[in-house]
Image (cartoon, rainbow over all chains, first blue to last red; front, side):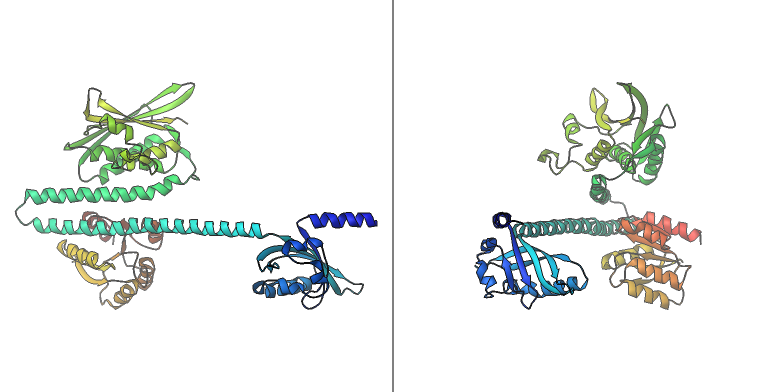
Length: 373
Length: 121
């Protein structure tokens, strides 16, 4: 390399963020050469070259042992170059993180004479990493907190409800031998309803995370058998009222793309018909039909009940309860909003109509439309 | 009279279970408030219970581990899990519970399960 080329190279190095070092393989790593841009850290090259400052003097005391040990172990492993990250002090006693890439220089006998390396200031990157680390920790804590409260709510609340329920049952069992008191009977009935409401809330809170799990895979599901199974299970579990569910389908096998949350959807629609119903016998008729639109096939399911019906203003907000939504939706149940979310995931739609178009209070019609597989 | 052993850490719940079971015609032969106590009491019963009503979250040893040890002592024991932790249902059934009832449940439901299990004995 010519003298001019050498000068050019030195110029390039000094203008770059990379500082070049040549360390002697001696205690404290005396510096034989350092590029002029060491002044970026506030030092003069001569302070090192004269031996006034050893390289080890500027390495952070908390890192020096690690750097020594790692260097020793890397050298013993027989490699020819290595990379270390550690902190050094600037002349003004500020701390900088550096990336040190070192090449081991040996003599003819294989003994290490020098280490030649380049040193890069990575303080900004390290600060960013630290911030990311802190942020991750913060989110992890928030996630853990959320899980804690979810657990506290679902577990402890269930136990509280269990206590209320058992107290009521005990009261009822003892009262059976005494004269009936209508007031207390109604009171007990109301408390039972509250317990059912609380239980549903807990179940729905649990469902939220399941519904938000976007990794769930949809598979081909026979909708008719799902409705039949859900109706049968529902009739068995809805022991408060008499329920009659009838089904009218043109086909025994109609397939849609869904997951196990389809049971939650059907159950919620049926439950809604029971809760908002003052009749001695709750009647739910399920009507299934299909149609074609723009060369695509759809399955339409209508759940028609004899309940109290839903006024128009509620029809608009009944599926909208969400954290991000306005306050008007607060007070509505969570179940139907979750039903809508599940159906969105199936690319299905849901609307509510009145059973009798002239009088909403005669019952509701929940209409769900699924793309047919 | 069928003998029932109740394992539940909540004092009120335990008391209510005992009273209800008594009113429904069962003989509560013992109550344990933690997993270790359940194992030790079960070991010392001169006559083993026909049914064990087991909670999951218990001090010292959880209901699942307590049930496993009880079943190790006597493989014919019938355990009904009654817990608010629905996520352990499958594990409880796999480990040998006869059924899992999620809290809150009504005693009619419990009674049905108890009768079903006892009828299969």
